[in-house]
Image 1 (cartoon, one colour):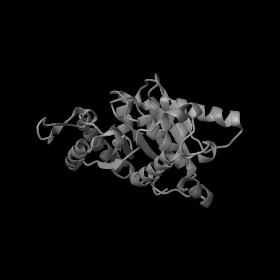
Image 2: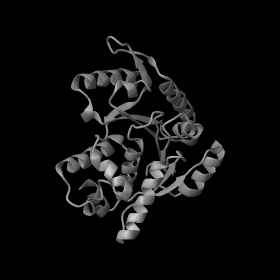
Image 3: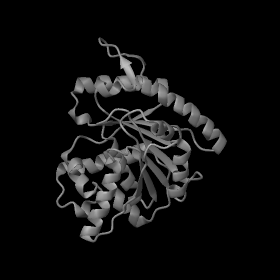
Image 4: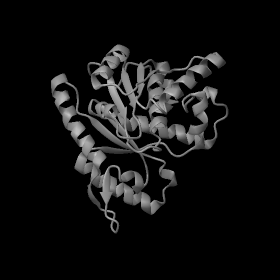
Length: 272
């Protein structure tokens, strides 16, 4: 990797139901398939969706006697920032990537994780209900009126992150808004959201990319801990599943994570 230490990826959105944990686990396993060592931290100690997914994956591997790329994962209770920092140093010192899944609410550790992120990923459903988390729009023309609290919070986090970048010699934070479930949005409304996101991205400096569509397969995979990349263990894949895998490949390309040294076999697994 091109920088010193692991690349820190934080998935954050104070609104629940945006596909945040599903996106996080698929990104984590995609990186593992590429040969990266990935260490995850679930800050939602009550729901533990991200951590449970990893546990289910381990149980499936043991039950089926198979070996799949996977990640280490720790669930973090409410603790001071410095204690969390010590846990990170202990468990992720030799990792290529740190992935942090935050709760769908305002949370002190989530703010800490956002401030220190190299890549901040904010998944959102393609609706103005979700857009309201980032910015408020006019009711008649759908023009952006002002930043919302969350966007201001991330703006402040990026300022703090810029200071860290200078002190630690790291790159600036890359904030990426991921549009999930776009297939269920009416075309005119989707275009309005796209225009609003474009206007907002110029104000606060995030990138926008397409994410994962709403598909039953994601909910079905959770109990087994499998992902769309585990194609040899999913049975026959329908057309929608193949399209979903293509969506994931496109998302990984759009996130622009730093390259890692990977074997040809690992590259074929994730790119196939």
